[in-house]
Length: 79
Image (cartoon, rainbow, N blue to C red; front, side):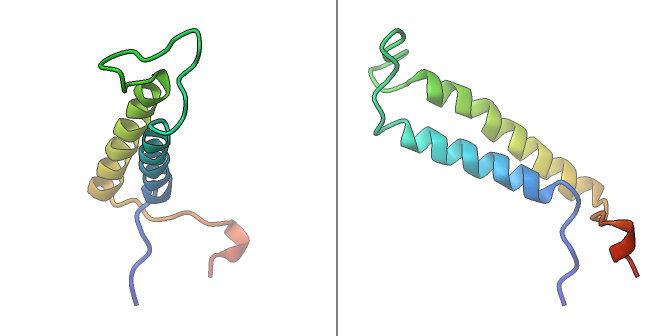
């Protein structure tokens, strides 16, 4: 049986995956009319805003793995 994952693993993974998928989707989406492309004819504001999500998710995953705090559940569910 695998032990439960450390606290913060799921939100960290969510942030990383959401940021990566949003970054990739911005390649097929038209840029905002008022901003256009920011650099090189391919970088949009959505991609720039996705990078902090990815960085925060990676930092949270590193923190969760190093601290190894146990998951918390509802008090009535604990045995």
